[in-house]
Image (cartoon, rainbow, N blue to C red):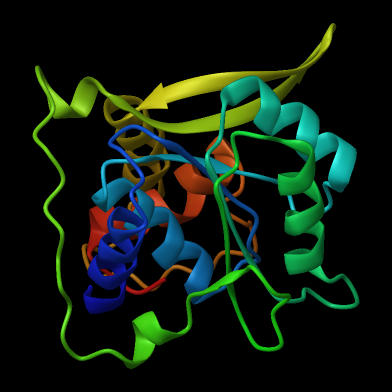
Length: 204
């Protein structure tokens, strides 16, 4: 919870306004979950990206949705994802920040590992949203249709509903331990892992 608040405050201190789209390309690790929840806590819009996407796929997708920041990690296996994110940012003028977890980051990448070390979290309260907060867009995910890739905006209500169905159908105990091999880089990934975990109050 401290790391999520720290991550949210970090994003707000960068000057990202409410409802700014933040792209996330992270593996199925604690950093990925903290980044997703931190973006939502900062009242920004998360845009999780598949790990196998490379430069042109990311440029095409993020250009359509007007992302202003990319959060990634230094490396995933043999792939230098921080370098990839910098190449994407060079192609897209609206991208203002590339942030990453990990060591040996390229120049210009904002390091994020300090959110785990800080005991004091300076929470920057985001401005209030008009209307129902749950009806605001929480995440943008990508689907593949007959005409190619398209973005789908999903509000908080849709995310909770997506996670509630598998949680109720599973009959899991309120404090269940959930093991997920699915990355939360899609609506299905979020609905089958992160959201049932939040609803159960258990361990992911």
